[in-house]
Amino acid sequence: MRSMWKGAIGFGLVSVPVRLYAAVQEHGIKLHQVHDEDGGRIHLKRVCDACNKEIDYEHVAKGFEDDEGHTAVVTKNDLAGLPLPSKKLIDVLAFVDADRIDPLQLSGAYYLAPENAAANKPYALLRETLKQTERVAVTKIALRTRESLALLRVHEDLLTLHTMYWPDEIRDAGDLAPPASVTVRPQELKMATSLMDTLSEDFDLDSLEDEYEIALGELISAHLDHRPAPRKETTPAPDNVIDLMAALQASIDSAGRKAPPEKAEPRAAAQGGAKKTAESKRSTSKKAPAKKTAAKSTAKTAASKKSAAKSTASKSASAKSSTAKSTSARSAQKAPAKKTGRRAS
Image (cartoon, rainbow, N blue to C red; front, side, top):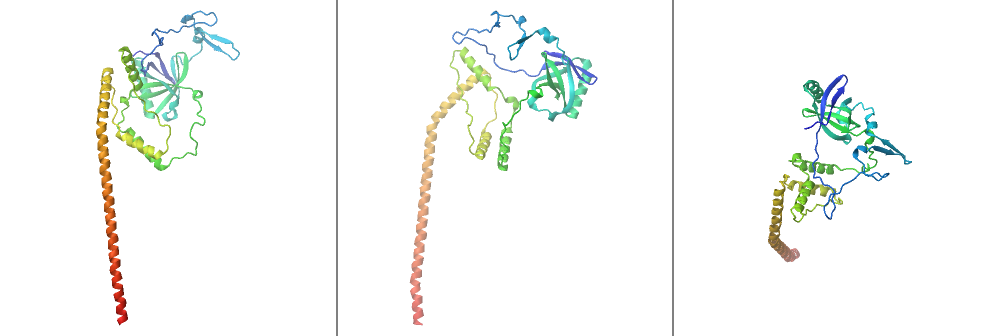
């Protein structure tokens, strides 16, 4: 790994010589501009509007145009002569609690390593002090002639540096948040918490990958091999939520049925997987009529059971009615006898 900056961390009278290394490396397939008809490369040229000539990079300067159209030309020598105290120094401004830093301000990430053996002791001292106090250091550093705020913190056994946006570079959110009148019921909060717990089970951050880049690689491979480009459908996002509780419950059920994510195989394996998927779809489509027949049979059985249940209920009702009538008739026969007896006495 090649260092991109060399200087020192300075806090008080303590100086720690360090080297700066890029901590991240963005992946991605690099594409360039070509003519769509013949594939010829398209080159961008630096042409001056005033003299209409192509300009070499060594003669390219910076410029600023005011509201009246006047241009101030700033050369590389002008920029090099500007005072920049943090050019070779990571100047510690203060040590603060980590929760005081809004992640919205963080930008690039870098590793800091001691420059030599003599720097190991003060480096370790600063690292352990930050660990035990659970603090971070707010600093200033100049990278590529631009000075920026930076955050110095501990990551495992290393000191890391995160460049930061200046406070006035963070835009005001205004009234983007929902109005204060919108409230959340306890049962909704409980369901949302349950969904969060379900989605977090067996989550492996290292297994995530860029599906768009994989699809782009397959597309380029198909073009190079003169094969039809693969097509993948994208699940559309829901446009509205009618019943929040029902949506939460459906999400929990869906998340519970999902299998753990698997890492994508190399391109050849991915193509084989695509073939297996296609065969699986054909097989599934063949089995569909059988499933429909089984479904119809099940429906008929259910209808038959329902009819039998109705018949049984009807017979039971008839029997009860018949019994009630018989009992009423017997009572009617007994009533006159009682009356006759009373008259005889």
